[in-house]
Image: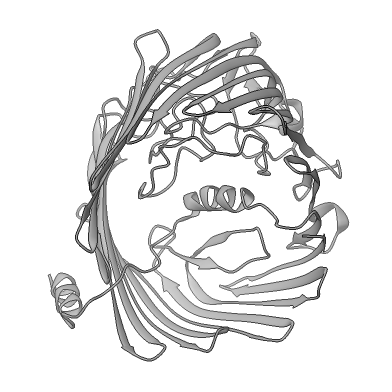
Length: 532
């Protein structure tokens, strides 16, 4: 009760206009954020990126990343990416490429190579991750990108895509093959599809690109002023039988020798209201649905999102808004935003048991943010979030409640100087157990002078356990996202230094964490850019 009273007093400190600030992030948000960065297109005609990073200096323990982008002419571009995770034996354990060509005389384009279309809200094909934290964003419209740009090793289709756009009519046809890491049982059936992309152990090497899929699909969309209507279809055949079910744990999971998905989607814009939605089925009684709405209310806006994914609904290339991986989920989100403040409530139900919880359950999150400008370049921000979900321990259900509070003071001077002081706390309650606490205090400084940019970030943290851990977004090498857990007792600090020339840039990062152990991470990145 004292904790709740403290929060109420803090939120009432100012009745002036506030603004939404940076939200809370967790480890599960890292992939989604990095995939968004991967879609960023270099404005230069030719760009080359080379990156090496790791926690050890041995060559075989380093992570290697190379990317090349080359615009060969108007509407034509080539993209090549190679990557090796720490401990993998191949210098390019993962490689992807695509060639995008657009006709100058006809309203059509062809993409050859690794593909990942984004159709509608992403139930059939989406460029998002289909998982993560509170789904505050909803794409709802077709992505202009088709080529695969992410370093995720289990998310692309290698083949060809043909795209046609004329007036209000657009269409796309895709075909090719896809490979996924897999694990099999004694009978040769695929029983799990790991997504990490790591191939270090003998078991991981054995399952590398084990499942092959022949994939074909298409999309047609008709758009007029104020509304649109579309339809999508995707079919895949597997070279191994797939059975992801687990007796007495996930009996409803996906299984079969192939998959078909059919979807229809629409969009309507009327005065101050926008509504987008999509519905998909696999033809076996399993459905997925997502509907988003946004209403402008004066200087603010009200947003809502409803989602439903039946137990057993499965999408190979899906990326729709979800907190549970686009399966076994029925939920809604309501968010009210205005310049200066925001509030949201997200609640979803799992209609069937999960792997670790044997009963249907309800998971919820609610929170908000406030922001107030104290003076020229000086801003104070407060954020609050509360999560509730059940846990199964010792053959019984217990209620888990997590509350997080953050207050930060930010100072900006000129165009490139930033200073920030942050205090954050967390309280974790589990049934009748004693509450656990975690807190951190951190200082961040960023500045630039001519061709040099420097970021320094230091945090002191302490938590009672891993359960009460805290997360902080860290500035990393360009194109990367780092969201690491902070737990136990210790210090975390890192430095990021960037040098930039007319046609090149060099970035160096070093991270040190002291929490009873010494954890060191480092990285170097070189970018070369030619032409505009």
